[in-house]
Image (cartoon, rainbow, N blue to C red):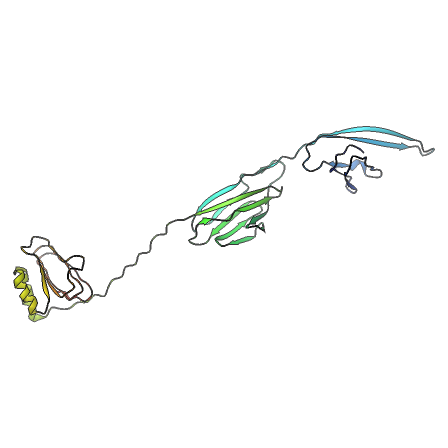
Length: 288
């Protein structure tokens, strides 16, 4: 046989030769009805095989040759078409997908042979532990990625190799999601001091007094001063943001809805006939 291209393989299932030159190949004694010729890998060229058969006369050894030609048309295998996968998932959410959904091959059922991450090869179905999560890619192309809690960013590129030798990539981006805030409220210790009976009649008359008269009352019961509006109108606010008075003060309101802001001292609040609000600080006593 002659004309078989260099690099092609001829075989009868038992014997096999890889063609190394343009010389003829002797297949005498082979199973001629089972011969196959496989073109060189990647070859697209048609070729013609010349087959010479020699018959020998047993009685006198005469020989006679006959020649036939076989035109071989090379049909290239359909290529594996792949496309990269770029996916996004939210923080703290498991990601699932399949890298083969956008790949195809007309001659083969595509499968994943192995994957490569950070220059390390992993078998299909193997759990890959990364600093930012765990990854599993299966033979059928399905995969899961579980990110580390509260982590966001780019996962190292995953390269997968198919059973046809084609390679492609999977890139995963984990997007940060704002967590609901945790709110804590600290409430200081509350304390109540009952009015001293001997002072009760003094402070209850304070709403009808002038600031000077109430200063006398404040001095009498051991307070430092008076918080009272001059010619008060309805709904007064005395003090400001708990920091106006850090001394022991007498707060005197009106007969309307008043708001009192005490400081860190021991304060006495005298409200009128309506609903009043008292805001104190550490170390206070209240009287109405």
